[in-house]
Image (cartoon, helix red, strand yellow):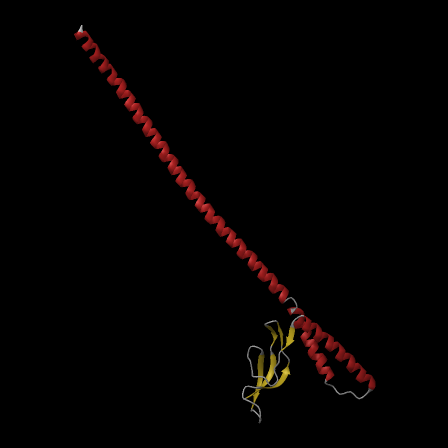
Length: 191
């Protein structure tokens, strides 16, 4: 009997071996599947993280671009407001020149003198309107020549008391709007 028990035990051991091998193989397959799933989840996670970083970077750049566009628009708007009277001023300045020439004529009658006073009032109101819109006359007479705001029409030898490069006569007044030259003053400069 003891031999029978031994045979039975050996048979059971042999029959247990294929079960254990199948279980081990199943466990290996299961572990491989889990590892594959983990690695695919990790690669998916890495891809999602890369996509997130790319979109985040794109969002930051887009926001910066929008801010730059807004700043540029604001700057353009301010410049437009600052220089809005430029075209009108360029059209009015020749009329002011003509009014100033009209005031230089000599009159001998009372009615002509009254007319001249009326012209002076019109000239004063136009000059005040220009000043209100930040349009200023360029100071030239007796000043050193500045090519940014003066246009030299002629040069004559310096008289006593005049320096070389000094503006000695203004032929046509110049005007500026803020820091922009609308018309350079036409001047005669001492050599």
